[in-house]
Image 1 (tube, rainbow, N blue to C red):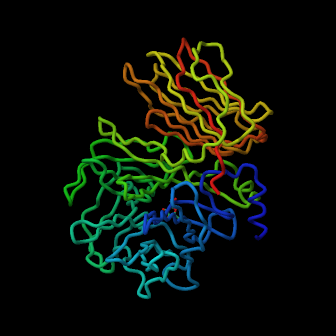
Image 2: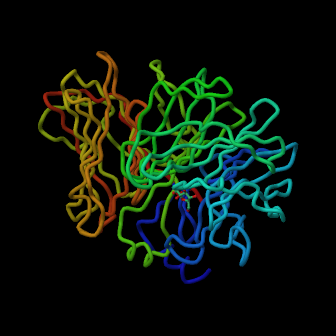
Image 3: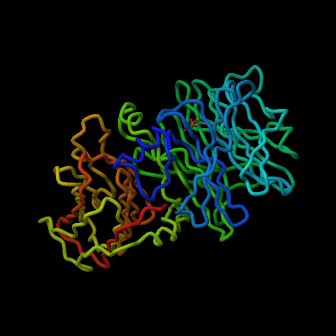
Length: 463
Ligand code: FRU
């Protein structure tokens, strides 16, 4: 174990049941694939420091989406060649039995292939890389993050791109052999925007009777979903929204599994200073696996993968039912920084629910609210850390409930990671209390609410 890993292990804010690098830097999930009974998670990785530089593909494997085994690095930049400045994001496909990684080499941004051994443990880059370079004579803000799928007896590749002063877009290519690629009309493009906007990390797949396009727009660094119709040639978006209502979640990618589930992992960015990240020896966490579904209106929703329940340990004592009023009342107290709260709440129309998470003993806290009058789910975390260098902006987004709809909450706290689900909407945030000595939860509602089926669990580390 080297010094970086020793530092990472010492950091009390390092999560226990969210996937994160052993040490060093992590960003986007890459190459998500289920193969021979195993889930593979590759990710943007700098093994040398907890800072973004010279991107590698880290690699981990799991049988349950929850407990991950770290494997050796899958791709590293070559000293010379098309990926000498980094192996950027991409995907995994199986071409006639051959596992392939399709990724972006830099600089300039070009698309490259690597072929895997049958167990996906060893990767050999194609000697003739790259297979696709930007079109000459066209100025693009980006040309990266290939997402490849089978369309009839051909391959399609979506690429993250944008046109300066025009906005972000997703380029589309076709191929028969993954090697020769021909352009098609763009798959999608964003609203006109000045500057160099890139729609990074496109991800495109069927869900129910619709197609979903995920894109991560930078600036500002927000992931969005578009749901619409795909006729094999043209995508017609019908609805769109944010995949996560916080500020941390970014660059999600979808994993299709043999149970027919579409599961998304996203990068939960750090919300603390670059110096703090470096000193901690690690940076960046994956979200929990989020199983996608469409609402009856055709909006994208998610739920935590059921396997996460296998981490539940001791139940934390809490009243299963409780009438709430404006006066805060204690729900539970636990000597752990890794827990799950599950509750159903009858929240009358126009009522507002407040859950305060008291973190440690230094008065640091975060408040989660669901307001039926404004139709908003919000996290107030101005007081979540005494460390003024942490990012503590309020996060919020729309959450409207039907007249008789119960509010269903799943809240996961994993040291510096908070992930909240409320009726299919998700909000992730990073919290950095200086004291991690236990947690108290208080609830209030104005004018009133009723909590039903409240359960709290301490969660085990996923190692
Ligand atoms: C998104 C991104 C991708 C790129 C990768 C580099 O976070 O910027 O567009 O491939 O990260 O690490």
